[in-house]
Amino acid sequence: MTIAAIIPNSTITLISLVIISHVLEQAGFFRWLGLHLAYWGFGNGRLLFLLVVLFGALITVFLSNFTTALFWSAVVMEMLLALGFSSQATLVFVFATSFIADTASLSLPISNLVNLISVDYFHISWLRYTMVMVPVSCVAIISSLAVLCFYFDRDIPRIYNRDLLPLPASAIRDPLICQWSFVVLGLLLIGCYWAEPLGVPISLITALGVLLMLALAGRWFAKRTTPIISLRQLWREAPWQLMLLILAMPLITIAWDYVGVSHLCRQWLEIFSGWGLTIAAAGIGFLATLLSGVLNNIFAILINAQAIQELTGINAALQELMVYANVIGCSIGAKVTPIGSLSTLLCFQVLKRQGFHLGWYQYFRFALMLTVPVLFASLLSLAIWLPWLIA
Image 1 (cartoon, rainbow, N blue to C red):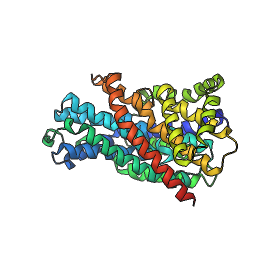
Image 2: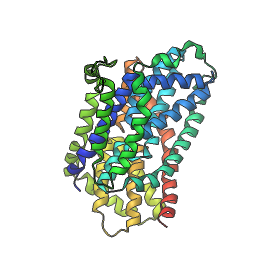
Image 3: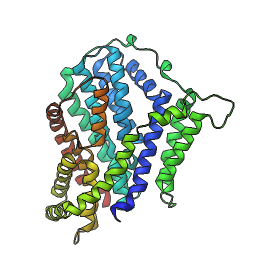
Image 4: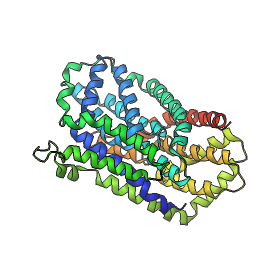
């Protein structure tokens, strides 16, 4: 399969998820959830930190890492500022949210664009992908929590006054959307898994999910009812720049392929293929990390996918391991630099809107210390789990 052939389904699917998330954000869903977490934290800063990161992981799994970076991180920052947290503590929470947005995105095909691209490129069933990557994702999430809590423990406030925040119900702008959100998302997830065996494009299912959300927001079923959320406002405030960038990046990758980067990667993959499963997984994962950090993970996943496809003389088990190791490197390893993933760039944008500045050196110092152990643990778990699953 060529790069151009996989662009429509993957990108339309992700853009649909971003639009659904935008409707939920306008309805007050994420603010409602954030305020609930603040009350469930019972004034304990460490518990609040764990809740924010864990729910960021859940949002990533079902609504993609872009949703976590674009909407959840903004809600977290708004909540922390209302609680009077220091700028350093706020940066820590937002950085942790950004970090988990990519490390938790291994779980399902819809959790990350790199997953969707790999699934389409290599014709992997959604069930197979889930069986392989959910255990690996659990390792990634647990190890991420461990390194985040260890590294940032001194910056997390021990107590906070939750009475400074309004009640969660006050954040809801459109109760109908919030009430039906879990039903819609559940149907969307079920539809994605049922559509694939029937040959129905996943992008069609997610597009139907968008129409359902817009119908709820616009009250299309009750013409005499005035919508609470203006669809024109949704249109104006939609993250169009992000969507255009998502569409453009695979096209730019085609130009990189003509330069010969894919051929060079194939040579390295041929070397890694002779080193055994564990070393091969580590080698491919760190190669994907290097490419993601320098070029961006969308470029890296496409370049490496083509290199893996062109490899000859390797067995099916090793090729499958290469595919998943490439996904891990392009998801987790992409955190090593600010340009490694679009979700990181989105978090920088959220910080900038609130007047916060996170320098590249400061980011790189944080990211390198946190990314390497999580990346290694995830690749090792893949090398252990996949052969057992195949057997």
